[in-house]
Length: 373
Image (cartoon, rainbow, N blue to C red; front, side, top):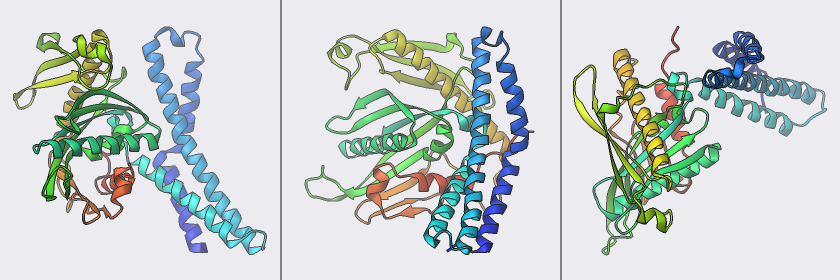
C-alpha cells in the first residue's frame, strides 16, 4: 500500500519533470509553431514545411507525455483519498501507483535522449566474426533479437542488405529502423557481442565462443545537411543473394558504393563501403546507398563532436565503441553487459527482444549530452 511519503515523492518527481521538460515554454512555442502552419503559403516550400511539422509533432509529443504523467499522478492522489473514505480498495490504489511510476520512469528515460541525433531513426549493421558457421549463426540470432525488439517498440524496419552464411546464419546484415528516438535507444548496442554455448555445429558437443559486431549510426533525413563529394565516389554492381526471387539473382541489381573519406582533423584516409540489395531496382538501391552513406558521414561528424567535448564524469568508464560490450552465456543462463554490470538470467527473453533493461542501464549510467544553449 502506498504511503503519504511515497505519494509526496511522486508529486515531487512530477514537478521535477515539468521543469526538466520546460513544459510551460513548450506550450507557448507550440502555439507559435501551429500559427505558422496556418499560413496559406506554408506548403510552398515543402522541405521546410516538413521540418516545421516534425517540430510541431515533437512539441506535442513531449507535452502529451507530461499531461499523461500529471493525470496518472493525480489519480493516485485521488485514489488514496478514496481509500481513506473506504470508497476504493488497497489493490486499486496500488494499481494506480504502479501505472504512474511506470510512465514516469519511461518519460524520465526518454528525457535523457537530448542529443540532436537521438531523435533520429537508426541504421543497424551486424557482421559475423571469425569462426565460420557458429559466428554466422550467432549473427543471425542477433538480427532476430533486434527485429523482435523493434516490433515491440512499434518501429518500422527495412532490411537493406542481407548476405547468407556459407551453411547457416548470415555473414552480414544491414537494417534501417524508422521511429522516434530509435537511434537514441539503439546507440547502446554498438560494439562486440560475445556468445558462449555448446555449439550444435560441433560434432564433439564442445562449448564454443563466438563473436559478432554491431554498428549503429543515425538514419539521416532531409533536415540533416551532410556534404557528399561525388568525385570521391565509385560504384560496383553485383547480383543479389538471399531472399528476393529469381529475377534478383539473375540481374545485377545489388550496388556497392565506395567513398574515399578523409578525417578533416587527423588526415587519416579510409574507404567507406555501402552495399544495398533492398529492391529489384538498381536505381532505387543507389538512392538508398547514398542515404546510408550520408548516415555514416553524419555519424563521423558526431564522433568528432564527442572527441571535442571529451567530458567524461569522474569515476565513469570511458566508452569504447569497438570493445566487447556484452556476453551471452547460454549454459550458465546469464547475459551480462560489461559496461554497466547489468545482467539477467532470462536468456530466452533477451534473445526474444527483451533488451530494455540493458538499454536503460546504459542510458542511466552514461546519460546524454547536455543541451546546447
